Image (tube, rainbow, N blue to C red):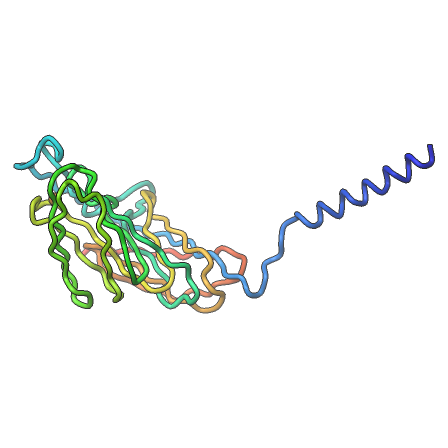
Length: 231
Ligand SMILES: [Cu+2]
């Protein structure tokens, strides 16, 4: 009987030791923090409807180019949010698909380096980029070429168009540091941002650019909010 009690006590001790080990870890001084960025826009959405005159079996009879997407609580989607000076960030790889004669996603972020361009439409597309720091690309992507790898080494925002389908429009932000694109509610999270003062930038294709300095705390989420102004 006594033996059983000792054994049970020992088991309980082992149990609590295990619980301590898996309990919440305290924020390490070396760890980064999260910056939750909310981007708002107090204006109306802008959607251009365009009649399609080509490849309608893949592209549809009509297409919509969503230039300003505003969601719940005035959240602005498709804005690039970044901490451009954050060091030691994991590289972000972009994959842009040409699907339904649209660039999907409409806005992407990538670290300087390589990205993938897909053609899942089974028709000819011709990627044509507009940029200043990186060399422009003007290249056919026939239907059998499902993936192409392209390289953009210099930070800047690159405009994507297609010479076959004049309405196709996309944006590729080459960003050093940590970056993300806001969701339908206008929110983007930057993870593992080094603690300390960080510059946070926001870019939108028609509403321009803004920046703010944020004091990032290790192991914590810092919220920052931007309001984009119409032009
Ligand atoms: Cu195209």
